[in-house]
Amino acid sequence: MNFDFSDDQKMLRDQARKFLSEKCTTKTVRKVFESEAGLDRGLWKQIAEMGWHGTAIPEEFGGLGLGYLELCVIAEELGRALAPVPFSSTVYLFAEAVLAAGTQEQKQKYLSKIASGELIGTFARAEGPGAVTPKSVRTTFKGGKLSGKKIAVVDGADADFAVVLARANDEPGERGLALAVVDLKGAGVKRRAEDSIDPSRKHAEITFDNANAEALGKTGEGWDITSRVLDRAAILIAFEQVGGADICLAMAKDYAITRYAFGRQIGSYQAIKHKLADMYVNTELARSNAYYGAWALSTNARDLPLAAAAARVSATQAFDYASKENTQTHGGIGFTWEVDCHLFYKRSRELGLSLGPQRAWKDKLVTQLELSNVA
Image (tube, helix red, strand yellow):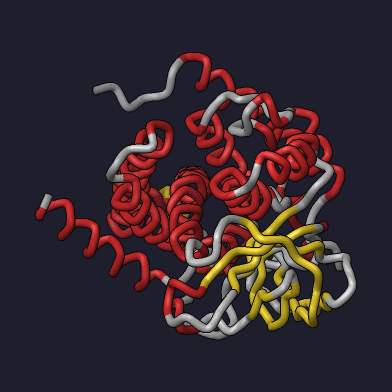
Protein backbone atom coordinates (compact mmCIF):
# COMPACT_ATOMS: atom_id res chain seq x y z
CA MET A 1 0.00 0.00 0.00
CA ASN A 2 1.37 3.42 -0.97
CA PHE A 3 0.86 5.97 1.81
CA ASP A 4 2.68 8.76 -0.03
CA PHE A 5 0.87 11.80 -1.40
CA SER A 6 0.09 12.06 -5.11
CA ASP A 7 1.96 14.34 -7.49
CA ASP A 8 -0.92 16.84 -7.42
CA GLN A 9 -0.90 16.89 -3.63
CA LYS A 10 2.86 17.39 -3.59
CA MET A 11 2.42 20.29 -6.01
CA LEU A 12 -0.14 21.79 -3.63
CA ARG A 13 2.38 21.40 -0.80
CA ASP A 14 5.08 23.18 -2.80
CA GLN A 15 2.73 26.03 -3.66
CA ALA A 16 1.61 26.36 -0.04
CA ARG A 17 5.21 26.37 1.19
CA LYS A 18 6.21 29.02 -1.34
CA PHE A 19 3.22 31.20 -0.45
CA LEU A 20 3.80 30.96 3.30
CA SER A 21 7.55 31.52 3.01
CA GLU A 22 6.77 34.86 1.37
CA LYS A 23 3.68 35.92 3.35
CA CYS A 24 4.24 34.37 6.78
CA THR A 25 7.75 34.78 8.14
CA THR A 26 8.61 34.79 11.84
CA LYS A 27 8.33 38.58 11.66
CA THR A 28 4.63 38.06 10.93
CA VAL A 29 4.32 35.85 14.01
CA ARG A 30 6.15 38.36 16.19
CA LYS A 31 3.80 41.17 15.11
CA VAL A 32 0.84 39.18 16.45
CA PHE A 33 2.84 38.46 19.62
CA GLU A 34 3.17 42.15 20.27
CA SER A 35 -0.38 43.18 19.34
CA GLU A 36 -3.75 42.80 21.02
CA ALA A 37 -5.12 41.00 17.97
CA GLY A 38 -5.22 37.22 18.02
CA LEU A 39 -4.45 36.80 14.34
CA ASP A 40 -2.97 38.43 11.26
CA ARG A 41 -6.14 39.41 9.39
CA GLY A 42 -4.25 40.21 6.21
CA LEU A 43 -2.81 36.69 6.12
CA TRP A 44 -6.20 35.22 7.01
CA LYS A 45 -7.76 36.99 4.03
CA GLN A 46 -5.02 35.86 1.66
CA ILE A 47 -5.36 32.25 2.82
CA ALA A 48 -9.11 32.48 2.14
CA GLU A 49 -8.37 33.79 -1.35
CA MET A 50 -6.17 30.73 -1.90
CA GLY A 51 -9.24 28.60 -1.14
CA TRP A 52 -7.65 26.71 1.74
CA HIS A 53 -10.56 27.21 4.14
CA GLY A 54 -12.83 25.22 1.86
CA THR A 55 -10.40 22.45 0.98
CA ALA A 56 -12.50 19.66 2.52
CA ILE A 57 -15.87 21.46 2.39
CA PRO A 58 -18.18 20.06 -0.31
CA GLU A 59 -18.74 22.20 -3.38
CA GLU A 60 -22.48 22.44 -2.68
CA PHE A 61 -21.60 24.50 0.41
CA GLY A 62 -19.10 26.77 -1.32
CA GLY A 63 -15.97 24.72 -0.73
CA LEU A 64 -13.42 23.23 -3.10
CA GLY A 65 -14.47 19.66 -2.33
CA LEU A 66 -10.92 18.35 -2.69
CA GLY A 67 -10.59 16.13 0.37
CA TYR A 68 -8.81 15.53 3.65
CA LEU A 69 -5.49 14.48 2.14
CA GLU A 70 -5.16 17.92 0.59
CA LEU A 71 -6.14 19.49 3.92
CA CYS A 72 -3.41 17.45 5.66
CA VAL A 73 -0.86 18.79 3.16
CA ILE A 74 -1.90 22.38 3.91
CA ALA A 75 -1.92 21.72 7.67
CA GLU A 76 1.72 20.62 7.61
CA GLU A 77 2.77 23.79 5.83
CA LEU A 78 0.80 25.99 8.24
CA GLY A 79 2.64 24.23 11.06
CA ARG A 80 6.03 24.84 9.47
CA ALA A 81 5.23 28.55 9.15
CA LEU A 82 3.67 28.90 12.64
CA ALA A 83 0.84 30.72 10.85
CA PRO A 84 -0.86 33.09 13.35
CA VAL A 85 -4.39 32.44 12.08
CA PRO A 86 -7.39 30.58 13.59
CA PHE A 87 -7.31 27.93 10.87
CA SER A 88 -7.44 24.90 13.17
CA SER A 89 -10.26 26.31 15.32
CA THR A 90 -12.34 27.26 12.30
CA VAL A 91 -11.62 24.45 9.85
CA TYR A 92 -10.63 21.42 11.93
CA LEU A 93 -13.12 21.98 14.77
CA PHE A 94 -16.03 24.31 13.97
CA ALA A 95 -16.47 23.26 10.34
CA GLU A 96 -16.07 19.56 11.16
CA ALA A 97 -18.72 19.82 13.89
CA VAL A 98 -21.15 21.41 11.45
CA LEU A 99 -20.36 18.78 8.81
CA ALA A 100 -20.85 15.99 11.34
CA ALA A 101 -24.09 17.12 12.95
CA GLY A 102 -25.54 20.14 11.17
CA THR A 103 -28.76 20.26 9.22
CA GLN A 104 -28.72 21.13 5.55
CA GLU A 105 -29.67 24.71 6.44
CA GLN A 106 -26.90 24.99 9.05
CA LYS A 107 -24.31 23.64 6.64
CA GLN A 108 -25.35 26.13 3.99
CA LYS A 109 -25.36 28.97 6.53
CA TYR A 110 -22.00 28.36 8.17
CA LEU A 111 -19.83 26.37 5.77
CA SER A 112 -20.20 28.80 2.87
CA LYS A 113 -18.98 31.63 5.12
CA ILE A 114 -16.08 29.54 6.37
CA ALA A 115 -15.03 28.70 2.81
CA SER A 116 -15.04 32.40 1.87
CA GLY A 117 -13.13 33.44 4.99
CA GLU A 118 -16.00 35.53 6.36
CA LEU A 119 -16.49 33.44 9.49
CA ILE A 120 -14.08 32.57 12.29
CA GLY A 121 -15.23 29.69 14.45
CA THR A 122 -14.09 27.82 17.53
CA PHE A 123 -15.09 24.92 19.78
CA ALA A 124 -15.69 25.56 23.51
CA ARG A 125 -15.37 22.50 25.77
CA ALA A 126 -13.33 23.02 28.93
CA GLU A 127 -14.77 24.52 32.13
CA GLY A 128 -11.85 23.81 34.44
CA PRO A 129 -8.37 22.28 34.61
CA GLY A 130 -7.77 18.71 33.50
CA ALA A 131 -9.41 16.55 30.88
CA VAL A 132 -12.99 17.29 29.81
CA THR A 133 -15.36 14.49 30.83
CA PRO A 134 -19.17 14.18 30.67
CA LYS A 135 -19.31 14.84 34.41
CA SER A 136 -17.26 18.03 34.13
CA VAL A 137 -19.74 19.75 31.78
CA ARG A 138 -21.98 22.13 33.74
CA THR A 139 -22.87 24.69 31.08
CA THR A 140 -26.59 24.33 30.29
CA PHE A 141 -28.51 24.54 27.02
CA LYS A 142 -32.26 24.54 27.54
CA GLY A 143 -35.05 26.19 25.61
CA GLY A 144 -32.64 27.67 23.09
CA LYS A 145 -30.74 29.47 25.86
CA LEU A 146 -27.11 28.85 26.82
CA SER A 147 -25.76 29.57 30.32
CA GLY A 148 -22.38 28.81 31.87
CA LYS A 149 -18.70 29.47 31.40
CA LYS A 150 -15.99 28.00 29.16
CA ILE A 151 -12.28 28.60 29.67
CA ALA A 152 -9.17 28.40 27.50
CA VAL A 153 -11.17 28.71 24.30
CA VAL A 154 -8.59 28.85 21.52
CA ASP A 155 -9.12 31.90 19.28
CA GLY A 156 -12.17 32.67 21.41
CA ALA A 157 -11.48 36.40 21.49
CA ASP A 158 -11.67 36.73 17.70
CA ALA A 159 -14.21 34.05 16.80
CA ASP A 160 -17.62 35.00 15.43
CA PHE A 161 -19.37 31.74 16.35
CA ALA A 162 -18.65 28.84 18.68
CA VAL A 163 -19.81 25.28 18.98
CA VAL A 164 -20.38 24.72 22.70
CA LEU A 165 -20.58 21.39 24.55
CA ALA A 166 -23.38 21.75 27.11
CA ARG A 167 -25.87 19.83 29.23
CA ALA A 168 -29.35 19.84 27.71
CA ASN A 169 -31.21 17.89 30.40
CA ASP A 170 -30.75 16.33 33.82
CA GLU A 171 -29.86 12.86 32.58
CA PRO A 172 -26.44 11.77 33.87
CA GLY A 173 -23.29 11.33 31.85
CA GLU A 174 -23.25 11.42 28.08
CA ARG A 175 -27.03 11.07 27.66
CA GLY A 176 -27.64 14.64 28.77
CA LEU A 177 -25.06 16.33 26.58
CA ALA A 178 -25.66 18.29 23.40
CA LEU A 179 -23.92 20.74 21.11
CA ALA A 180 -25.09 24.29 20.50
CA VAL A 181 -23.97 26.98 18.06
CA VAL A 182 -23.86 30.47 19.52
CA ASP A 183 -23.14 33.89 18.05
CA LEU A 184 -20.30 35.25 20.19
CA LYS A 185 -21.23 38.81 19.28
CA GLY A 186 -24.80 38.38 20.49
CA ALA A 187 -26.49 39.41 23.73
CA GLY A 188 -25.66 37.43 26.84
CA VAL A 189 -22.08 36.63 25.79
CA LYS A 190 -19.04 38.08 27.55
CA ARG A 191 -15.43 37.41 26.64
CA ARG A 192 -12.29 37.94 28.65
CA ALA A 193 -8.80 37.47 27.26
CA GLU A 194 -6.67 34.84 28.99
CA ASP A 195 -2.90 34.59 29.04
CA SER A 196 -1.54 31.97 26.68
CA ILE A 197 1.91 30.44 26.41
CA ASP A 198 1.69 31.21 22.68
CA PRO A 199 0.55 34.83 22.15
CA SER A 200 0.04 34.15 18.44
CA ARG A 201 -2.85 31.82 19.39
CA LYS A 202 -4.74 33.81 21.98
CA HIS A 203 -7.28 32.22 24.35
CA ALA A 204 -10.41 33.54 26.00
CA GLU A 205 -12.82 32.85 28.83
CA ILE A 206 -16.39 33.02 27.53
CA THR A 207 -19.39 33.46 29.81
CA PHE A 208 -22.94 32.78 28.61
CA ASP A 209 -25.94 34.28 30.36
CA ASN A 210 -29.14 33.07 28.67
CA ALA A 211 -27.50 33.61 25.30
CA ASN A 212 -29.51 32.59 22.24
CA ALA A 213 -28.17 29.41 20.65
CA GLU A 214 -29.30 26.75 18.20
CA ALA A 215 -28.93 23.01 18.60
CA LEU A 216 -26.32 21.18 16.55
CA GLY A 217 -27.40 17.57 16.38
CA LYS A 218 -29.61 15.77 18.86
CA THR A 219 -29.57 15.77 22.65
CA GLY A 220 -27.57 12.79 23.88
CA GLU A 221 -25.25 12.84 20.87
CA GLY A 222 -23.09 15.75 22.04
CA TRP A 223 -20.30 13.67 23.53
CA ASP A 224 -20.13 11.22 20.62
CA ILE A 225 -20.02 14.03 18.05
CA THR A 226 -17.37 15.86 20.07
CA SER A 227 -15.21 12.72 20.21
CA ARG A 228 -15.47 12.23 16.45
CA VAL A 229 -14.60 15.86 15.75
CA LEU A 230 -11.62 15.71 18.10
CA ASP A 231 -10.33 12.55 16.39
CA ARG A 232 -10.40 14.27 13.03
CA ALA A 233 -8.82 17.44 14.41
CA ALA A 234 -6.10 15.38 16.13
CA ILE A 235 -4.90 14.05 12.79
CA LEU A 236 -4.89 17.47 11.14
CA ILE A 237 -3.10 19.09 14.07
CA ALA A 238 -0.61 16.20 14.03
CA PHE A 239 0.40 17.37 10.56
CA GLU A 240 0.91 20.90 11.92
CA GLN A 241 3.08 19.44 14.68
CA VAL A 242 5.10 17.37 12.20
CA GLY A 243 5.66 20.51 10.13
CA GLY A 244 6.84 22.39 13.20
CA ALA A 245 9.14 19.56 14.29
CA ASP A 246 10.59 19.32 10.79
CA ILE A 247 11.53 23.00 10.67
CA CYS A 248 13.05 22.77 14.17
CA LEU A 249 15.28 19.97 12.93
CA ALA A 250 16.28 22.04 9.89
CA MET A 251 17.08 25.07 12.09
CA ALA A 252 19.19 22.97 14.45
CA LYS A 253 21.06 21.28 11.60
CA ASP A 254 21.82 24.56 9.84
CA TYR A 255 23.12 26.13 13.04
CA ALA A 256 25.22 23.04 13.87
CA ILE A 257 26.90 23.31 10.46
CA THR A 258 27.67 27.03 10.64
CA ARG A 259 28.55 27.40 14.35
CA TYR A 260 32.15 26.68 15.29
CA ALA A 261 33.54 25.91 18.75
CA PHE A 262 37.17 25.09 19.49
CA GLY A 263 37.92 25.20 15.79
CA ARG A 264 35.28 22.67 14.80
CA GLN A 265 31.67 22.72 13.61
CA ILE A 266 29.54 21.92 16.64
CA GLY A 267 27.73 19.42 14.43
CA SER A 268 30.87 17.30 14.45
CA TYR A 269 30.55 16.69 18.18
CA GLN A 270 28.85 13.47 19.22
CA ALA A 271 26.46 15.16 21.65
CA ILE A 272 25.02 17.36 18.89
CA LYS A 273 24.89 14.46 16.42
CA HIS A 274 22.81 12.48 18.91
CA LYS A 275 20.40 15.37 19.39
CA LEU A 276 19.86 15.75 15.66
CA ALA A 277 19.51 12.00 15.13
CA ASP A 278 16.91 11.69 17.90
CA MET A 279 14.99 14.68 16.51
CA TYR A 280 14.95 13.04 13.09
CA VAL A 281 13.81 9.64 14.38
CA ASN A 282 11.00 11.15 16.49
CA THR A 283 9.81 13.35 13.63
CA GLU A 284 9.78 10.49 11.11
CA LEU A 285 7.87 8.28 13.55
CA ALA A 286 5.33 11.06 13.99
CA ARG A 287 5.13 11.51 10.22
CA SER A 288 4.40 7.81 9.76
CA ASN A 289 1.59 7.92 12.30
CA ALA A 290 0.25 11.13 10.74
CA TYR A 291 0.20 9.46 7.30
CA TYR A 292 -1.68 6.51 8.79
CA GLY A 293 -4.11 9.01 10.28
CA ALA A 294 -4.50 10.79 6.95
CA TRP A 295 -5.44 7.51 5.29
CA ALA A 296 -7.96 6.72 8.03
CA LEU A 297 -9.42 10.24 7.84
CA SER A 298 -9.72 10.29 4.06
CA THR A 299 -11.38 6.86 3.93
CA ASN A 300 -13.38 7.21 7.17
CA ALA A 301 -11.79 3.94 8.24
CA ARG A 302 -13.06 1.90 11.15
CA ASP A 303 -9.80 2.35 13.05
CA LEU A 304 -9.84 6.17 12.75
CA PRO A 305 -9.97 6.61 16.58
CA LEU A 306 -6.86 4.45 16.94
CA ALA A 307 -5.06 6.28 14.14
CA ALA A 308 -6.02 9.64 15.67
CA ALA A 309 -4.71 8.73 19.11
CA ALA A 310 -1.45 7.35 17.69
CA ALA A 311 -0.91 10.45 15.53
CA ARG A 312 -1.78 12.77 18.41
CA VAL A 313 0.60 11.17 20.92
CA SER A 314 3.59 10.73 18.61
CA ALA A 315 3.29 14.16 16.95
CA THR A 316 2.94 15.96 20.28
CA GLN A 317 6.02 14.22 21.63
CA ALA A 318 8.02 14.83 18.45
CA PHE A 319 7.30 18.58 18.28
CA ASP A 320 7.90 19.04 22.00
CA TYR A 321 11.26 17.25 21.80
CA ALA A 322 12.37 18.96 18.58
CA SER A 323 11.52 22.45 19.84
CA LYS A 324 13.46 21.90 23.07
CA GLU A 325 16.49 20.31 21.43
CA ASN A 326 16.55 23.05 18.79
CA THR A 327 16.93 25.56 21.62
CA GLN A 328 19.65 23.44 23.22
CA THR A 329 21.55 23.14 19.94
CA HIS A 330 21.57 26.92 19.62
CA GLY A 331 23.17 27.11 23.06
CA GLY A 332 23.20 30.45 24.89
CA ILE A 333 21.56 32.43 22.10
CA GLY A 334 18.79 29.85 21.82
CA PHE A 335 17.20 31.16 25.01
CA THR A 336 17.05 34.77 23.84
CA TRP A 337 13.98 36.62 22.61
CA GLU A 338 15.73 37.65 19.38
CA VAL A 339 16.29 34.07 18.18
CA ASP A 340 13.23 32.26 16.81
CA CYS A 341 13.62 29.03 18.81
CA HIS A 342 11.14 30.07 21.48
CA LEU A 343 8.42 30.71 18.90
CA PHE A 344 8.41 27.02 18.02
CA TYR A 345 8.60 25.91 21.65
CA LYS A 346 5.59 28.06 22.52
CA ARG A 347 3.59 26.69 19.59
CA SER A 348 4.52 23.12 20.50
CA ARG A 349 3.17 23.60 24.02
CA GLU A 350 -0.02 25.27 22.78
CA LEU A 351 -0.78 22.57 20.22
CA GLY A 352 0.05 19.88 22.78
CA LEU A 353 -2.78 21.10 25.02
CA SER A 354 -5.29 22.37 22.45
CA LEU A 355 -7.26 19.11 22.28
CA GLY A 356 -6.88 18.05 25.89
CA PRO A 357 -4.03 16.73 28.03
CA GLN A 358 -1.58 14.21 26.66
CA ARG A 359 -2.46 11.61 29.29
CA ALA A 360 -6.05 11.50 28.02
CA TRP A 361 -4.86 10.69 24.50
CA LYS A 362 -2.44 8.07 25.81
CA ASP A 363 -5.31 6.43 27.70
CA LYS A 364 -7.38 6.50 24.52
CA LEU A 365 -4.53 4.95 22.54
CA VAL A 366 -4.26 2.07 25.01
CA THR A 367 -8.03 1.55 24.98
CA GLN A 368 -8.19 1.55 21.18
CA LEU A 369 -5.28 -0.92 20.95
CA GLU A 370 -7.05 -3.25 23.37
CA LEU A 371 -10.25 -3.02 21.34
CA SER A 372 -8.40 -3.72 18.10
CA ASN A 373 -6.78 -6.80 19.63
CA VAL A 374 -10.19 -8.10 20.76
CA ALA A 375 -11.59 -7.56 17.27
